[in-house]
Image (cartoon, rainbow, N blue to C red):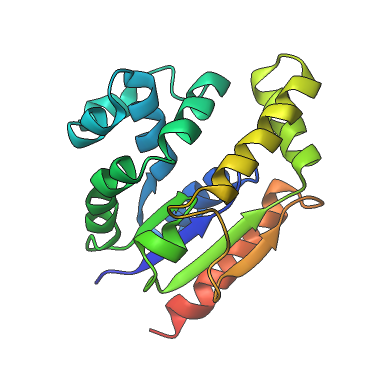
Length: 196
């Protein structure tokens, strides 16, 4: 049986943590789709060629969780040919037997609009920047500026802009603990999963 959970949201909102927890709880596979774009950006050169030849081992690079990789991902993600090259990979994963959780920016709106469950995880830019700063260090004001700029690029791009699907459950983690956010997501998925 396939069962797809699409989780979208801006950087550092908590969607990765929530996605991993949902996948582990239900025994579903998990794909952090941002890693695909981070890997394309980190590979350098022609991003379209990199997307078309991306290999699973490219997702294992140690430098994919840096601020620089995140910025590079946001820059290549605005290229329609890059998005098209990575779309089939994501859709195939979403239909895997045993269930799948995909997190990213356009999963519920473009990649898997028929997903059984769609979540949109968000938080204020200030809270997200503080979380990212605690994780990676650096100057907190610079991290906030980068988060705001990345949001602008992700929301304003012509192809697959970041926005919640019309039928997404919105989880605002600004004032939530990790446990509260995970519990809200698990409850939303369980309501649909139990009814199948």
